[in-house]
Structures are given as C-alpha cells and as structure tokens.
Length: 380
Image (tube, rainbow, N blue to C red; front, side, top):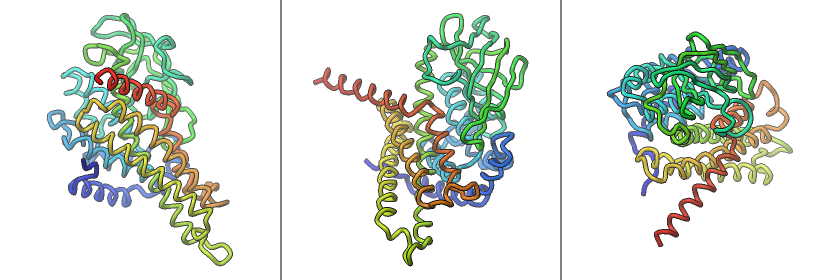
C-alpha cells in the first residue's frame, strides 16, 4: 500500500509552500507576536480564504472545493511549516468538521459555504478549565426546548475565541450533554483574552449568560460525536505538527552547517549529529503515523480512532523534540527574542494541548489498542 502523496497532491503542496513563503514569512508571525491583540493576521487569513483552502475538504454542494482529506492534510502540513498565525485549525478542522458530521442539512447549507470562503471564523468551546473533560464536571447548562434554548456557563480557554463568530459548544441539556451552535456576536456572550504560550493563536475566556443557542443537528450521543470530531481534527493537526517539526529540523541543520566553533562547523561534532539524528527519527515516525491517519480519514476506515490517537501522540512528541533541539542547537542566541526558534517552540506546546494533553491521547491509544486486541482474540 502506498501512503505517499500522489503527483497532483505533491503539486498542490509545492504551490502551497511557494504561496506561504511569499505571503507568510516568519516576519508575519513576529508581527502578530509583538502585537497579539487579535491573535491572528487578518490580511493573511483573507489571502488564504481567496485561495479556497478553507473549503478543500468541504463538498462542492456546500460551496467547497471537494478535493478530499489528503489534500487538506497536505495544506495543513504547509501551514504548520509556516507557523501561520491564522484560525484555520479552529474553523476547518473543528467547526466545519462538527457541522459536517453532526449538523442538519439546513445548518450545513447555511454555515459551510461561509467557512469555505473564510468569511466565517468558527471554533469549538468544550473545555471549562484545567483537567480532563468529564461529563460529571460539565458545568455549562442549556435550558429550553429541543428547537433552541439559552446557554449559561464559561468556557476556558477557547482557541481563536476572540475572532470567531460562531462556536460549537458542549453543554448539559435537558436530556444530558449536547452540542450546540452559538452566535458569538449575539446577546449574552462576553469574551476576554487569555494569555497563553503562543499569542499567535489567540485564546479567550467566553462567558455565556442566557445566550441563544440551537442544537447541532438532531442531538444524539454528544460525547461520541465529540470523540469523532476530535479524532478527525487530531490527524489534521498532526500534519501541522509534522510541518513545523520538519521546518525546525531544517533550521537547526542549516545553523549547524554555518556556525563554526574551533575552526569547524558545529554540525561536524558528534553531539550535534546525534541530536539532529534523534529529531529526524522522531519526525519519520510521526510522518508514518500521520500518513496512516490520512488514509484512515480519507477512507473513513474502521481504524480511524486508533490511527488518530497514534498520529496525535507521535506528532506531539516529534514537534516537541524538534522545537526544543532547534533552540539548543542555536546555543545562546536560540533563547533570545530576536531569534525565530521560539515561534516553533510556542506552536509545538500549543498544538500539543489544543485537543487535550498528550497523556490523555496516550491513554486513548492504549485503550484503543486493547480494544482491537480483544476483538482479534474474540474472532480467533
């Protein structure tokens, strides 16, 4: 089985890289980091919307390009490589996937065309503070009829919550946990910025005080739906992590070849060679798992939950190591604000937490491996 990109997908990836090199150099990231009020670059977001990338995996019937998930993975890898300060992940991997998977036909027809053009910035609000997401700890409440209701609660932190106009919120309903659509520009919604390690992906504390909401789709098992959404997003985010890890490794390699110590490039010393070799191996392991996840996502294979957890764990570990060793290879200058190394370190930490901590995904991976083993033993 060939898990590599096709020639057409490679061409799309190459064009995306050229485009981002032109419109999103690291100076754009630095500009947002030094002026983090909105947590993104509106001009870059508009340019990406014009390219149609937000609709890459959205069906043509809903205003998208209908390319497919492997093409979206290729774009995600290049966005991660550029450390792009845009709300792409929140809008496309989370909000759009939530609407596609659980939304009604009316909701899909109303919202997805706006996501596809970049006009609508969406997000998901499911966390209420530190700690694992447990149904018994869910404090947000929706009171009202099956056709709508009023939401009261607080979500923290919500990635891209300052710029998003719509959100999918997890809250307790009359019949248990549910997913709800809320207009973040409407009444009863208060937002304030939250300081995080990566200001180029702004986060917010969102308070709801009887904010009008509507159920996402026709209800159903909200926690199962959320798990499916997160599995799909985990694979797409793994490609962003992979792109950032590869770029961090390249930065470290280039510096090791141009920086001299005692008359030799520092890359000729064993200590540096071993560091970069370790990063390369981690990146290759992450790439193999990400490709497996892309196959499972594009074919909606039964292996998708297991592939998502594996991709998530491997990509988080690879990006963390690559970003850390990039700083170490740069030595004293690597720790400075003027160096670009910290962009990747910040994004690595952010992406490792945005869908839940790595330890939670390791637990999911172990559980899913056990489930598969038990199923195989039952069939034997």
